[in-house]
Image 1: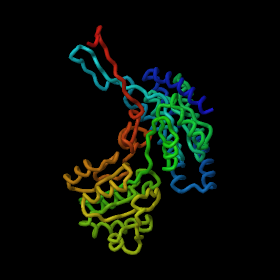
Image 2: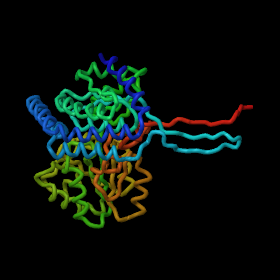
Image 3: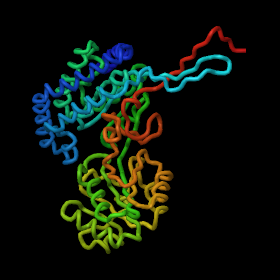
Image 4: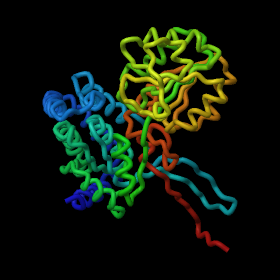
Length: 413
């Protein structure tokens, strides 16, 4: 069954790759329109998933990722429309030169082929992946989790309607009907049919995929994101940035998990942070943070510095300057996203140079580490490994390049 799905996806990928830019764009636009037209069916399907998830005891973070409401459904359609409006990638010439011997050499952007998306309670991935893969001239195979199966099926109806409306095969986007782990293992072994696998979900899922795959895998195990509060110009603004990074949506991978506070400003900043988050966020701090913050701050353990809470919990540590902050991030971080709050431009630029995470920010919430917020339209995922992409990935991350060489009877001597 899995191999048959992959074979039909491979055949569809050749048709999508040969389609015109206008045809692919029309398909993506039709998908966006179909999402809006099928909104009531999508919300009804999502309500069934949510009800089943509550019975199954899914965590609050997982339920938040799973939930769709009219605003989020409109957001799905808007993200698809942004992908449709983006410049075309396929056939773009990345570099061109004439060699001394007269050969014309260029590098041209081309599709990857067939992308396997494996994800958990994230129904938005269904439409994001479909739109981005089509923009990049690929077919995709979606294997969502059982907790979102009804939502994903309803969204697939809209996606395939868009494809057929534009004259492209419905098989260019398929949903694996099985939700067991064995189906994943079978899928990621098909190295003759699958060109890239992108898992999105918990660390356990991603490690399972990486351990069983024979195809290339884009990995992102955890999002242990840091904010280093060095020398902000405005204390209240710094507190607001930290609060946004933790509270706005705590169950996502770009939420801040650890705040590092420079010792020079700790006496002013820590009490202000504790007061702002009181009753909302559980704080876990080192000895200095507990002394400054009072009895509401719990003692942090060594495990807290490694933790991706995905919850209203925040670890706070006082550090002796930028060197200590960078050393902490290097030891405990996950190469996802780090931010520095400071008015010192020299320190800020040093932080940017020396922190090697996939996204590094100055005076901004970590919540901006998102493909849509960074101008990519929808996001296919976030890579925390350097091959073949690093950080949030849009359509360009789903392409590669080939050399095109034009000669005139050239022979090599």
